[in-house]
Image (cartoon, rainbow, N blue to C red; front, side):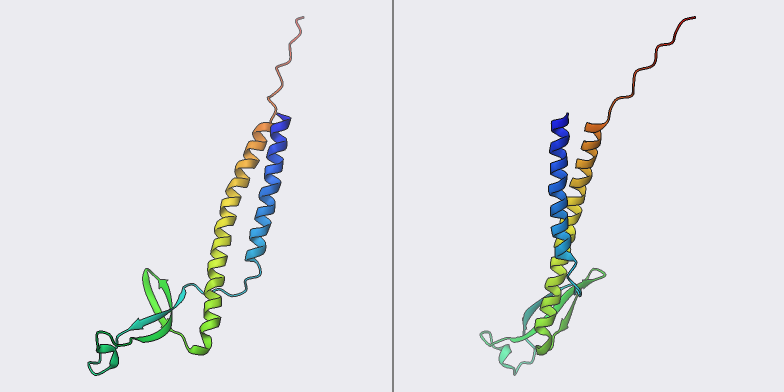
Length: 133
């Protein structure tokens, strides 16, 4: 029993160290932007445009794509803002990954704490004998 509780204590300490690492990855992030930044290539639809030809070059624009109330939204990004918006969307992804890792670690910590409690819990003392008069 003592061996099992020692192993559970060590496991809890390892989980706590992992928890702190994930929290340290999450805390420095100051701004987040949900979505993805990518280059969208389209045809404009004008019959006289170079993109109308089957092998014609398409129009390219960098966009931010995100979901809002179940619908995908797109917004064009000005050239000067692309690096910033990419960084902000990457911050969002890192934040969500760290958050998911924290949830998983939290469940593991609770499981280990519950196991430790069961290991340490003593049974109730036996009933005292009553003296006969």
